[in-house]
Image (cartoon, rainbow, N blue to C red; front, side, top):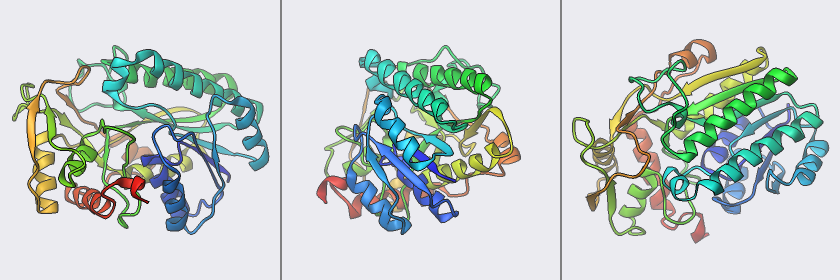
Length: 339
């Protein structure tokens, strides 16, 4: 089964490729345009997997180049990670987010249709849920009324894929991620965002190695027990395993299927910092700053549907996630840039 992984050099993409090969899927083709990733991630992923899978530097909006890749490799299924993903940046540059995320997904679907590919797993997000929902969030919770353009792009892509699946009789899984953290247990691949990180874990770890001077805790006046935002932090390896489970499900089920991928537990920013300090044996320099536009006070999942239908559940602990994140960052203080 030939699997095309878009955004294959990215954080979640690279870990998912490792998990795919570990579970017997060794016919993998990866594509990335390096907008937020580096070729070193592909080199290391190949080494960890023991598979010299084909890689193409390409933008999904280049239909001619993507069509050639599909035709050459006889793609059977697509795992679609590629896209811009920073909430704060999306608020500042909404047009860039709408143009990139929507156009790339539409172009990918057009190429799939032309090449008879009918299975797709989409990297969606908990940001598609409306701000007024009660916690925990289920797949039946209200969506739309998103609090930021990034969330709206994921919402719109979900609708595009739902309509396309219905029209073409495709099998599509919409996987709504919560907050990925952690790294491969080897410490050889991990989260290495280009420029200033937007996600909390690389900010924490880069502060400890001195790449960032101080950790800004954005908001301490939320209506939560300690005033900081609450999120559902899931180890990236557990997240990667969710994609393998989704492949198996799509092989037997047509139509569009929505699944939350989270732990079901809410952890505040201060609790996450404390867990990292304990796991790494460090003290983190931090200060409180204003809230980020578009952020919610709390967001965490009910993952029961994935447990029931995908036979998947998050297994790794917060301590394991912090230890693995610190192993990656301490082993690679400059990320892939230092290689």
